[in-house]
Length: 270
Image (cartoon, rainbow, N blue to C red; front, side):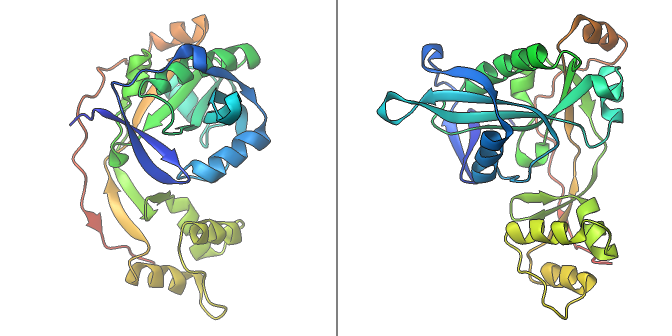
């Protein structure tokens, strides 16, 4: 299944623009931005409002009110949650790579805005952070994405990750590690609870144990568990050394269809 529309976000609402619409390059500019501006933009618009361990943020600026340039897109490159993904997908040491942790454009931007913006954002990354020679990015088939943007920019497709159990509240994915912190009362559990509450879940009562709270969220159809088909992994090799390292890794044909979704499973709070 392919789509003729590009997904965008505004104030955490999913919106779409026609792929056939074309950006006017003269009306837009791309530049490095500070973490404060990038974080505020992501918190306001992205379906994942949490802030990653950012290494560089790049903004897309377009026409705004009063002929002023307005921030209409943000790309955030961040330290990977697991450093081994750089070695696995790029063949480099973990400190020589980064991940595209957030990438968002407003619906004001035309259909080919993603490739216009991302290609220039990668250029800024290479100039600003010379030690970062590869960018790993994932597309989520469960959300309807197969990585067409990455394919359009000739990124190396490394394949689809193994299927796994996923969790969500509404459209917001929740990591299994987040739930584990809450159940076990580990360090960071209070922050994990705050994150779930921010996604729309009711806060636990003062007498409610974490285990019982998660069970209640399941009974009330707030928290769901499903079998995730596995993310598609891509690697942008942005240096000569990265391209050489990439020759030793598989470069698979780009996916063209979505993996059929798995049915939702009962969520076990234990």
